[in-house]
Length: 302
Image 1 (tube, rainbow, N blue to C red):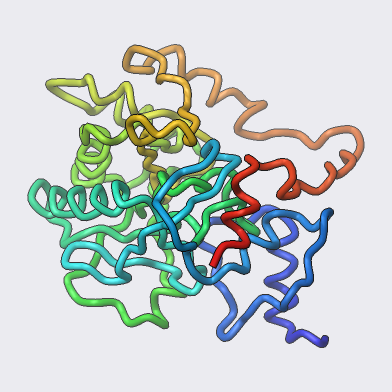
Image 2 (cartoon, one colour):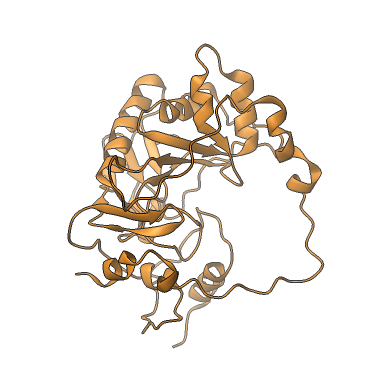
């Protein structure tokens, strides 16, 4: 099969690391794949168009699992809009859908924002993605852009190309002029929701929050520094109570996470990493056989 230049460029992105807000070429569709024991799991889960039938469950861990009976977030709501809809990553647990609705309403009450822009959630049946994430596999993760939703509905073609707002300074050590009190309030509104377990942000954003937060600072415990996350925050919910198929993450480290504990993130070795002496040997493909056993059934279910 011959591919267009745009599609070929996209496949190059798929093969390597890519930004979570990369633009998909118009009209691009993944070619069919027969599949086999050594086919990477991401190639199979990335091609499923619809959630499975059956009861709603998260199976496995955030970075190695799948979803049965996933719920769908409407692409447009009164206080949210889904970006990059062509990726088909707007699925999750019902508790995640409920959180987005609740959180987005709270943002409109506590800030001047008209609502929030939603990035990636999970694929229809979860599982590993072709690009952009290691987690987001069990329907309990959502990326929220650090750019306010406009009061009008964004046309679908524009949702594929509009970029989010970078709020981290060029030297990666602080925030820029696009970081505002409203932006911090949005992070706080997510972190103070009782269903939220973690909010992942760029270390420079965490440092700014440590410097600027006033009053009750207990919510800072949930805000964790992580690579990237300079134009969006990654919100993670905990496993549903009593659901043994969902493997929880360790509890967050107690305390605000400010001061000297952040120093590591701003060392020269972290901010300006040097390439290794020789290319690393690529790991073997991550196949469905390496996932929780029930995920094979979820993948093939009607």
